[in-house]
Image (cartoon, rainbow, N blue to C red; front, top):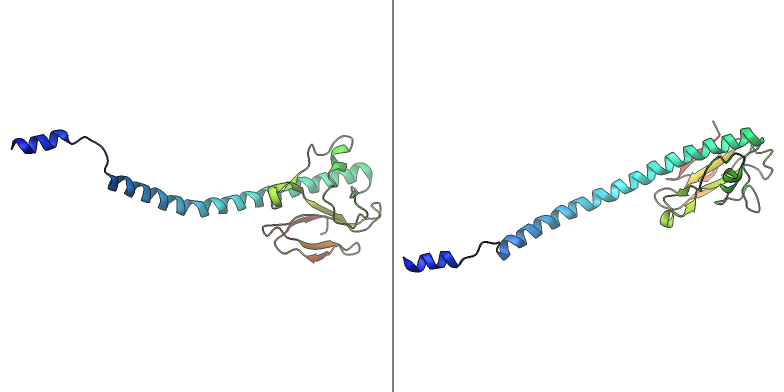
Length: 166
């Protein structure tokens, strides 16, 4: 009888190794289940950002056209060349139409501006413009926009696009 009391008295409260391992296993299982859901949420947030940015840029290009009589030119060798450095025209307009360069979230590090191209080299004769994001796969096959019809040249694939075509 005395031996049993001594055994109970010496046992200190706490968790056994087995209990700790079970808790860690449960936490690991929950983490494995949560990570894919987080990645899906990140893709959805990038999609929504791209859609919102493209709406802003379309409104900005239309505002620029209303104020100047032409679409902003791409600062490239040709307005029909795909440009990523065209938003500076919208920032330097008087008054400024946008405050900062908007970047495509699907590019490496989200640090490349959205692509832009006019339907002709002469911005005063351009009927159409195209602004787009490379989309989830990070690759684009778009090469331009037709000046007569406004048809996209190339394949849009999973790219997010906005244009003034009907």
